[in-house]
Figure 1 (cartoon, rainbow over the protein chains, first blue to last red):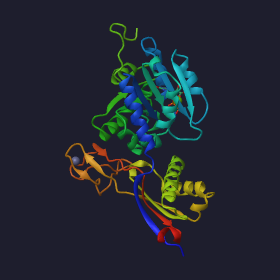
Figure 2: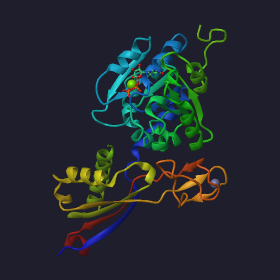
Figure 3: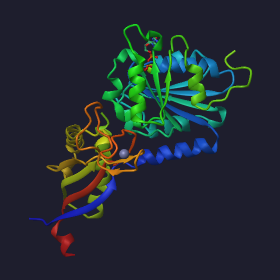
Figure 4: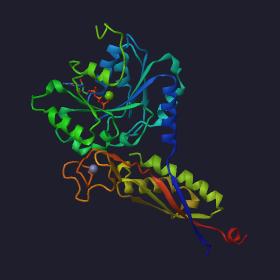
Length: 223
Length: 128
Ligand SMILES: Nc1nc2c(ncn2[C@@H]2O[C@H](COP(=O)(O)OP(=O)(O)OP(=O)(O)O)[C@@H](O)[C@H]2O)c(=O)[nH]1
Ligand SMILES: [Mg+2]
Ligand SMILES: [Zn+2]
């Protein structure tokens, strides 16, 4: 019988992702670009919020939006209607974006042609939480129609975010309640910026723009 | 379902280890991860089985994932260690501080880590 040997390895199985994510963050910072990761549940309103942002910001900033989806280009087509550049990444069954996918897309373009980058992550409150994509700020979107337990059931993704958006607040009081979600989000993280929005009416979008640290020219705020 | 890419990453690293040690066969791989890394042991095992089914040196090998105890760092009282043993009745994951009861804690990342690999080494190599 052949001898056996136990090798002690003690090595991360998957270092590439975080190294690449740090590289992306460093590059964006060096070039003075902003890069945001928009995560959230399926149908929470990520795309409609990005449409709102594109509509308000495309006058002042050159914007590039990366849409992650299992398949189809529906979301990137929707956002592209608002005068910003978009690209759809199809993860082909993958449940989250990762730094490698982002890196590949960014390599195809000249970063100098843009000021602000958004990634719409795959609709999912579980997996994107564990995958750094190199953004400077991580945003989670949930909507009040998902029920009052949505944050209690998926707290980890909120731990890994700086901004929590409670969307579809135009339906607040109509059988849905935003207060519970706001309270839960604040229990998870005291430093969390929590913003109530309606991507349908545009309420809260300006507050979101401010929270992201995006400047618009004085006096021209959303004219 | 990111277990497939994680399993591939493990196999790629172990292939290198096999080569460095001139091993015949992989017997067992032990990996660990923290509870907040969202790795599901059974899915990881299944993915490993699929990936290695065609690899001669991995035939019959097993992959064991141990989920490590959670570690938190309380932002209220500066406690560091495992979360409240009582658990958390309210949230699906427990990251509550056992000292002050706050959930305002920092979660310690414990990445999926290859701990040990058991290899079968041919006689010539060990005696050489
Ligand atoms: N009433 C209301 N409906 C909204 C709001 N935001 C989004 N919706 C609707 O909710 C549905 C889903 O919105 P999307 O923007 O596609 O959501 P998403 O998060 O991008 O969805 P996926 O990319 O599929 O995960 C659409 O029918 C939107 O019109 C809102 O604030 N209020
Ligand atoms: Mg969408
Ligand atoms: Zn504490």
